[in-house]
Amino acid sequence: MTRPSTTYDRFAAITAAADTVPTRLAAIDAALAAGIGHKLFTVLVLNWEKGENQRYYSNLPDSYRVGGAKPINKSSASSVLEGQCRFLNDYNDIKAAFFDHELIRSLGCESCVNVPVRWNGKTIGMLNALHEAGWYTQADVPELSAYAALAAPALLEIIAGWDKP
Image (spheres, helix red, strand yellow):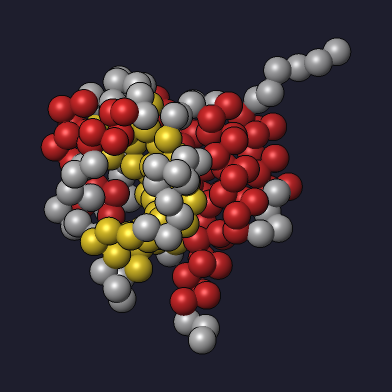
């Protein structure tokens, strides 16, 4: 007998793929795609010393390359920095939030959820999932938060690497 994949099966796959940062982030990507869903998925790490969000993972690297960075915008990302998911529900929200809204729309994305990755009460990064308009809701927060918690070890490893020559 074959059972359909459950959320817990997807979480187990993530922890099994925990041997490197890229494999853990790719496993989170696959689990999120199979569960809640996304068309574009990126992972940003907050580098407070440089004042940047630095992209360490993208499922569409031709459009959103790994290594890209943009300034931390404390006003637009205040809810994420405070530990809350930020929902952008339609193209007008996307357009107001992102300078690259046309690229986002060309990928079939008109909604977004930014999920804080937290450690010791601080946001250290975020998972960003984008999909068609109205895709993400508050009902997704528990599962999204679990993905963020599973991403924390990878982001901590990235941050620890900044201190090494």
